[in-house]
Amino acid sequence: MTKQKTTKRGSIEAVGEDLASLDIAREKRRRLRALYPEVFGDGKIDFEQLRRVLGDQVESGVERFGLNWPGKAECMRILQQPSVATLKPVREESVNFDGTGNLFIEGENLEVLKLLQKSYFEMVKVIYIDPPYNTGREFVYPDKYASGLSRYLAYTRQIDAEGHRFATNTDTIGRYHSNWLSMMYPRLYLARNLLREDGVIFISIDDNEVHRLRSVMDDIFGEENFLAQIAWQGMDTVKNDAKHFSTNCEFVLCYSKNKDLCRIKGQKRTQHHDRVYKNPDNDPRGPYLLTPLHAKSGKASTRYKYTFSNGVTWEPPTGTYPRFSQETLKELDGDDRIYFGEKPGSVPQRKTFLKDVGSYTKLTTFWSYQFAGSTRQSNSELSHILGPGAFQNPKPVKLIKLILDSVSEQNDIILDSFAGSGTTAHAVLALNKEDGGNRKFIMVQLPEDIEESSEAYKAGYKTVADIGKDRIRRAAAKIKEESDDHLSLTSGAGIDLGFKVFALAPSNFRVWDGNLDETGNLEDQLLAHIDHIRAASTPEDILYELLLKAGFPLTAPIKKTALAGKEVFSVEDGEMLLCLEKELNQEVIDAMAKAAPRRVVCLDEGFKGNDQLKTNAAQTFKSREEDGIVFTTV
Ligand SMILES: C[S@@+](CC[C@H](N)C(=O)[O-])C[C@H]1O[C@@H](n2cnc3c(N)ncnc32)[C@H](O)[C@@H]1O
Image (cartoon, rainbow, N blue to C red):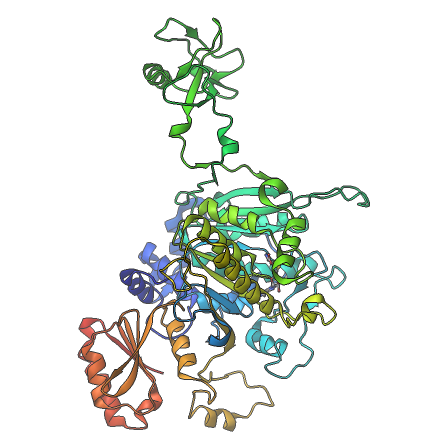
């Protein structure tokens, strides 16, 4: 899952050389400046100048077209707030931690998406999410934005549990739709940043919010990037006790990041599709499909009469128009690709040969339960893996496999930030098994508590994240067992069936809290900052935090080496060297500079107040600045 070195360097530069999480507003300003340098003066944006540059397409009236709700402005503020968290490696829950390219991140997805912004900026090909539908029954995570992480810690009982529980967003608590929109907006906004330019996002949703979700998506992705609203027939029965209609469809909204760059391959061609290709005149090129030469729409001025080489004359029937130009008809005729029928007077049609059709055919926007699976099937699918009742209404693997297969190529990264029972990860593994691909997944799931009375709790699961991880382990084991090939758990040799687990946690570096309330103790905070690394943090915890903040993927290859007798971590073949020793010396500084990495990181504590050593180190690396080495202490 590592990026090309050149791209990686580009991305580090793009996000600035500091070790903070991505500053989204700064990044947007940087892009604006690259496009319109003339509107920046003294580091500030001249709005009047921008208005002039953009011409008359600027909306300046008081009344504007667009989606608005109480809380929208706050969403923008919140998503720009940098995260003060980290992702802590959890080796004991992972499978093949050091060799896999797959990730399972346990945590609150707004915070996690913020943390992934630098390392996965424009790296994800497909996002599939299945968020809460806002039916009034499922929970909506209580975003009290200013204290995102502390709320999460309270919720997960990592700090005082003052009843920071989930709340269901019912229509009696007011701001029903606004709450949901405020939950979705920042997450979709951040998710879009992670999509590649040719990337595509699919979102499951039902009647409750589909129209509002489309408006939000138009807002964030642009209505020109709308691709489809797929109706999925998830219910395979009729509910006769329904009051008015028995709803049997929900939707999958599909948007591209850039419609001109994305490619929807469609669905794999099957024998079922091939059955419609026939060969009535025993054409040596094999079976073909017939298409009329006329179309229902067109312009009257485009009508013409055409005489083929065998003397048959054709013109579009009244009220229709030619489907092809005269030149195309001439080419088709010359290439013997017109079928004139068995009887004289038959209408000529174009032949499309099966041998010329690729291995994929177009998808339609209605997916039946036979085609994409049903909720009933997925419930039974999951109970076979985890036992009955482990998770209510997961999506069918078949549905997500179809989605992934329609756009992803073999080495793409797939993200699901509302992972639930981990169906998307399961679908990635199953698709890789089917076509020998090496797609990688990133799952994000809140450790949502499981009801003690539930079957899942009785089976030993405490949170939904536990269910997701176990499902992936079991699905992987099954794939391995069923496979004829020799599958290795090692990435690169066979299918990568492992995954690395990370958990959202407070930064390993104590963050200065400038918002001390009246109970906060300034003296305590000052003392705590003398040793600003948390006592419980391991070198590996610190290593991964620095990796993320320097913009490397969490699966970047890391080698532990020794330089001048000190332990040094080398990331991506020496792109970055980290020495987290608490006692540094000149020899290790010289050895790291000699290795000519892009970046060197040491702990401030490593200089142990040895100002001379620190000054020398700064000078050593300053003299190497022209070689592009950046030296940082943390
Ligand atoms: C509808 S379920 C997804 C089901 C999944 N597609 C499957 O097939 O199993 C939505 C999941 O999103 C999770 N979730 C809700 N809010 C979240 C948040 N803020 N961060 C992370 N996960 C969240 C819920 O815990 C729930 O498990």
